[in-house]
Structures are given as structure tokens and as C-alpha cells.
Image (cartoon, rainbow, N blue to C red; front, side):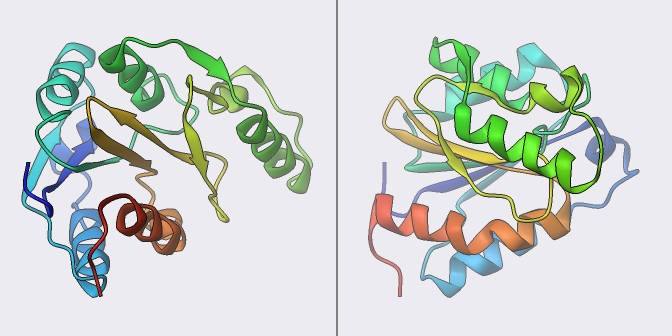
Length: 178
């Protein structure tokens, strides 16, 4: 592993079909560059469990940081937390801070949280949340095989709002930067 090995894993069938144009990888790379870091690899995959777990297992241990974008929301194809836990061989647990975030987000909108909303509070055991000031799904960070995996929502406005904290975590984990 080189000190600046940072990979991106972008997830979603909408990226593969062309229904959504990937602007997130450019946003992440530009923000990291402002901290003196560069992206060395980018992988884009659809919402296939086996393919995504294999990519996580193949990448963890070979790069310093893996930023996984997408798949944190309330729908059935939002698989990121489950897949990271599977790749790491750990359990999903109800994270109290993530649950509080989801409940507060729902309360601000005058809605009762349902199972789909609360799904977003189940994170890999030991994960540290990354606050999302705009959306219902928090990001999270966890180390797997010596690789810091940082997860981010696929919604560009939410990602943009979270990038300062994400970059702080990356710089603090691997050093360097500006």
C-alpha cells in the first residue's frame, strides 16, 4: 500500500444504466485534492450483493482508504451497511446515534419513522457515524483489513455537505495533505 492509495467504489444500478450521471466521483476527487490527496482507482458497480462484497473484499487491505458512495438510504437496493458488514465478517447492530439521527430527521418532517427509515440506523458493529446534515442516512467509517472504509450517500447535495468531515477523517487516518 502506498500512502496515498485512495479508491472510490460507486454503487447503483442507476449509474450502470446511464439513468444517473456520476458527478460524485469528481466531487470527491476535487475535495480530496484540496487536502493534497489523490484518487488512485475508481470502481463503479450495480446493486449486486455478490459483486459488491467481492469488490470490498478485494479492495480492503490493498488501499489505505476506500470511499464507498451510494446505497445508504431506506430502499431495498440500499445495501452498503449490510455489504460492508458481510465483507468484514461482522454483524449489523442498531447504532444509537444513527437511530437518533433518523428519528430526529423524521420528527422534523412530521412523519413517524417506519422500518425502512430505521433500516438506515443498522450499521456494521464498531462503525463510527459521519453526520449527514441534509438527509436521513448517516455515513459511517470503519477499518477493514487495514483499509479505512468511508461510506457516503449517493445524493450529491448530501455528499457535498458531508465532504469536509469525510476529508478530515481521511487526512487524520492517513496523514499528509495540505
